[in-house]
Image 1: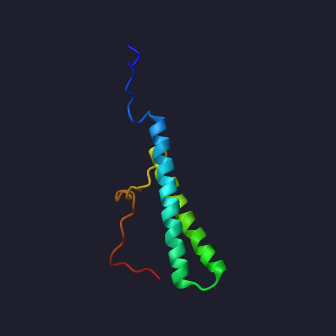
Image 2: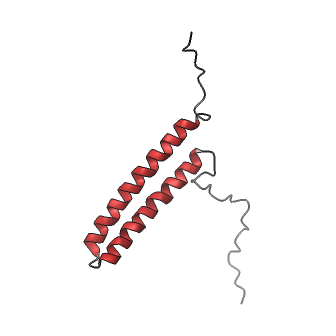
Length: 98
């Protein structure tokens, strides 16, 4: 009686999309920050450059999570389509103009 819930398609389930995006963003932020910290410890001596590598790694993680989340919410697709060959002009073979 009281358990009559409508099943919504996954493309309309905003709570699941937000949960997936938050989870993806946190994971990528933490993992890429740790990778930046490890790279900073391995390659740099100055604390400023080590923190810069951590910040760079965190930025990469946030940016990649933003790209995937925007495609999840119906934004642009991260995979670019190859150019059509019909639109490109035909190359001129054998003729050289100076």
